[in-house]
Amino acid sequence: MRSFIIILFSLFVQHLFAQTPLTSTEIDQFKQHVKQTAQQTKTIVSDFVQEKQMEFLNDGAISEGTLTFKSPDAIRWEYTKPYTYEVIFKGDQLLVNDGNGTQHIDLSSDKLFKSFNTLLVNSIKGDMFQDEDFKISYFKAEDGFQVRFIPKEKRMKRFIASLQLSFSEEDYQVTQLKLIEPSEDFTLITFKNKQINVSVPDSVFKL
Image 1: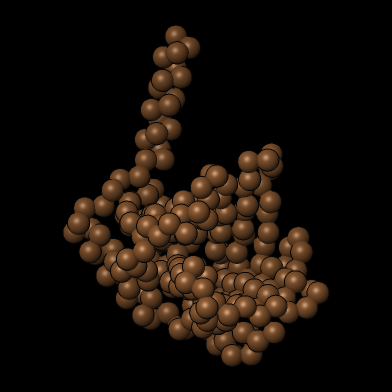
Image 2: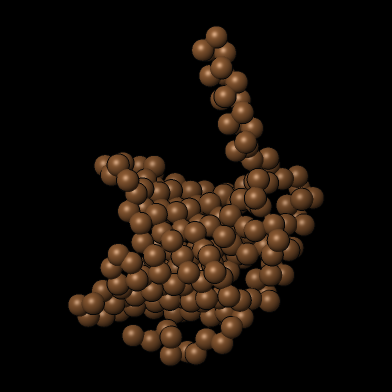
């Protein structure tokens, strides 16, 4: 009897969290909606919660902060809890301020770093479906859509097993970003209180 109950519960859970692959027609429609949204999105200001789950930690490490994006390629991650630091991507430049000074890194000199930068920018914009560096799969989830990206490039595979983007069914904006490492450790970023196309001065992306 106990085994029967366990089997029923397992089937219920699988059904509850099941994700259905999109048909080719549904994929085309989904991509069209997301691209239209991305083209209309000039700025994004959003709170975020970041969970870092590692094998040797019983509880995930939780961080909070604010993301600011300005088209075409400026992104600022400002972490406010439990510690404060800032990371800015602008063009081929990466700036990091950890409270002990500012580091400047030229991303253009390294193909891997440049791929990471392109991946990050396009992830926030929700417009990366033509990226030839990834195998892409599309799914219908309970609360929207999920797109999974598996890297093809060997060097990137050393750092990323897959990237999963979750999209709202209402406005086709990115709601979650999950980066899974080959070790199965992962980073999950959930966006909330998102503001679209608000005024963002260029000074936000200076350290």
